[in-house]
Image (cartoon, rainbow, N blue to C red):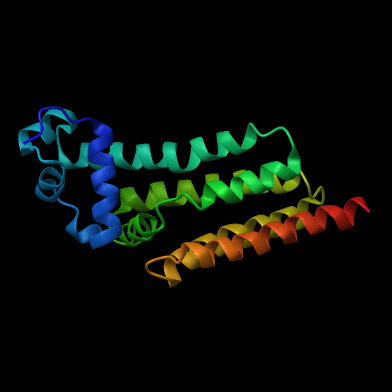
Amino acid sequence: MRLVVTRDDYFAAALDVLATRGHGALKIGSLCTAIGVTTGSFYHYFGSWDGFVEELLADWEQEKTQRIFALAAAEPDRVARVRKIKKLALTLPHEAETAIRAWGHTNPIVARVQRRVDQERLDAVRSVVLGVVPNRREAEQLAVMGISLLVGLQQWRSPVDRKELARVLDDYEQLVISRATVLAG
């Protein structure tokens, strides 16, 4: 048994279980076994299963959405910001996100967070695209396309082929940048 674990250890183990075995396998026992602790440790940190789920989803939203977009927004060059957001999108835990989306079909709390994350991601991509494509309607359409590409590949390919996703996002990046060139030229 491990002597010291953190909330982050639980969250990493949960994302791994989600990615490899799906939301149905995400249980207190499987988490504790994965990180080598007793269930007492789990209850010490989270109090209950619902407490854990809320904290897991909050961490996922913060780390895999808000932090990523803050890093992209910190890029001063508008075109480099498009490249940065694409690069960061490749680092997402795609299989775990697929499982979270499936979990949301049976759990209203997960569904609510998933919808909020989708909206945050759409808003952030729109903001990045608007930096290079000033036409609001076109930027909105490109933002929807970007999110659709990401979610679509996550849902369609399991496991996600990282190289294929990179190629698709490279093409998307070029489309966005080409629209900036067309509008500027």
